[in-house]
Length: 173
Image 1: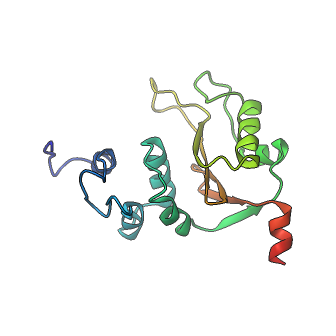
Image 2: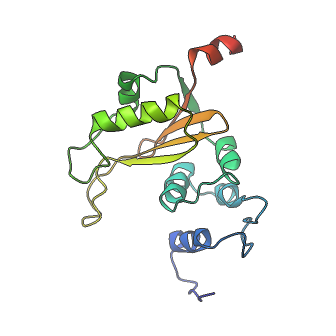
C-alpha cells in the first residue's frame, strides 16, 4: 500500500480508503460482509450530504452500505408526485451550461423512468460539472433507489425527499 503523509487532506484519505476493495483489505469498518465506513464518518462529525456526494462520485455506494446510508438520512420530505413536473419542483436550479448532465427535461424524464421502474442504484446529476473551472457553481442531485426505497437528494441545499406512491400513503393511514 502506498504511504500517505499525516498532513494529507481528510477528503483525500477518505477517497483512498474508498478506492480499496473491502474484499481484499478490511479497513475502517469496510469488510467483505458489511460496510460501516459511512456511519463511522458521520459519527466523527462529517456532514451527511458532503459524504453522500463524495461516496456517489467515487461510485462507492453499494448494497453493503446503502442500508447504513438510508438509516442515517436527515429529515426527509415525503413526495407522492413524481411526474416530470413534480420532479422539476425538487430541482430548483438547473444551468444551461454545456457541462450539465443533460437538459432539465431529459433529466426529469430519466428520473421519472428510474422511479417508476424501481431501477436500483445511485444516479448522480450535475447542473454544471465544469472540470476545467472548479469555481463555477454546480448543483448536484442524487437519486438513490434500494430495497424498494426511493430517495432524492439536493446536495447543495441539504434536502432529502422520500418518494412514495399513493398506495403506500393509503397503506400508512
